[in-house]
Length: 488
Image (tube, rainbow, N blue to C red; front, top):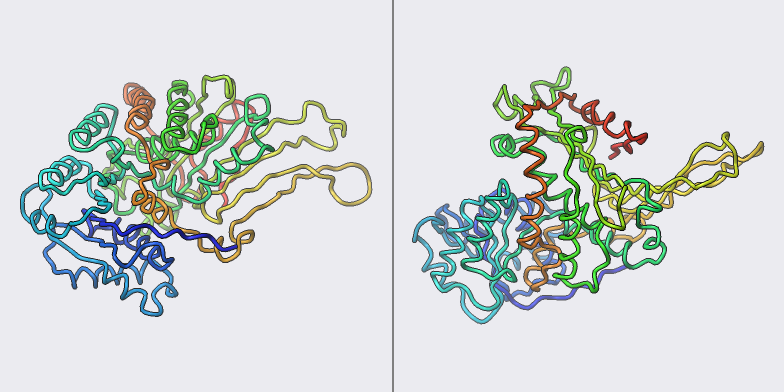
């Protein structure tokens, strides 16, 4: 199966923070892969902007090294890399002053899409928005892209939204959550709304509960200072897992249109019940025996021996609407867990009556949507175990792995940033968060955080390489259920 690539019109993309880690690891390699695929025209201009003083040739060398490190060798063959590098330019810019802005403005001409990627800390969003507007760098086709974290709480998110709104329309603001660019996440909408098979069953009458797991095998790494201020709740639950929950639970939009989709997601967030204190488990990873030097504990990694910030959180919530009333949603995410795995498990109810007797065991269908690694979808169904001697039932998977089902295209799916950056150029906001959606997510998150801070709760320790703290197992076992495994 060969995917259809639709080229975009020539555009200008200015990457503020163009020498930073995100640009080096994700943004620039993603652009290069889209260039290799024939989607980005030669006339496009990609301009790096940062404080570092260097010329365009030095920046091209920096980008070439990044591409060689973060893309497969086959992408750099046949002179393709040289062609891409010829689209690049660089300007040294002071985000908080006037240096470099006239030079940058002079490089942006013509009536074409102008996309400004704010690959910088949130404190610079306002100054950058102000200066792009003040130096006449904004036209009717201007878009800005802002990375998370979008605020630290509801008040800061509102202030940030207000700051951006002073200079840009909501239709020009693209709040990026790279999870929404993953191929399987988009396939989730196709599975739900493109197949009559699932929609009649997608409700509390047939679904027992839903589990959303985003497990990471790595620790906080070099993000210790930021992470200790944020924690798993702010860093992952409030955005990535919230977005997955919305796509799983939302009503069918009237059409596949940006605002129609985001309207339905917003309704889900506003219908979320408050989280009870006994429905929350927080954890903090320890160093595994014999690995303390190579993989230190959380507190050692962040340099704070008294830290009460969580590197793991699991919680139970419900959605108070007709479709999902009474159906629990269990969400968990953490660092230094058993494996890297992001999966949504839709756990269907048991058959109302088993005709096969107690010896056959209890069996139920499970729909698993694997986001990473090995992206794909699995549906577990119950069949008779082969052989003589009675009716013994077993669960077997109907497995659709992208790598197997889609051939070469499935083995090397586009990175999330590839899809999202091209959507920015095309002006499609479907996979980006709207301002009211961000604020609603914080309005649900803030009371949860305020509650454990008021109680003085301390995260439970858990061993690196495990599935998390033992209390997380009790959280779900109290309801007579169990977590699905964390598998690579």
